[in-house]
Length: 197
Image (cartoon, rainbow, N blue to C red; front, side, top):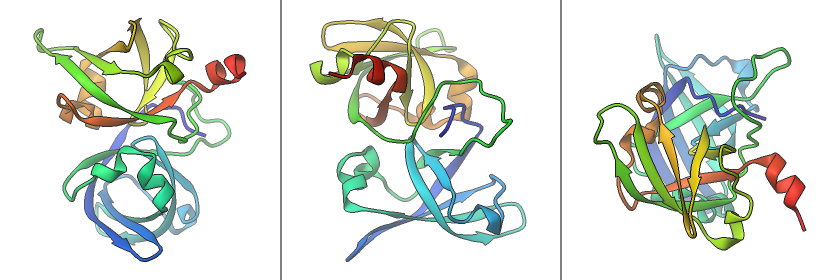
């Protein structure tokens, strides 16, 4: 379980396919030890198992395995070396809970329709949304985009908008978003549970 409060990012060093799936190597200054091997890490909203660590003085290389299913159901199919991803360790008992409940289970991928950055501070971003998932959205409710806990500002017929403050932009890969980019989306767990039919 995660909170969607992103404090660290990583840079994709290598992303390659092998017969059994995909292997991802990420460089980050997020502190890891051997005790973290086998734990769940949110990688831009996708819950992945940390399989190996290679430590340097101030950075670590993190190794993950991705199944074909993960690739097909997430925006990871567009990953390239040099891309930035958001990283969050799983919650521990007693941790501060400041975002919302995020499982790291991507429900769908959606596309950036437009970005309004005209005030040079907060960004207003519009995303498309299908009817299948629109019914779970609530204005002023929560949504996780690339693993970031955000508040839905407005819902329209086939799209919604979020307002992203400067702090979030500066500390996540949302700053790199451009029109027509795809992002990972996890619908709020509580909304899915209450509205499940």
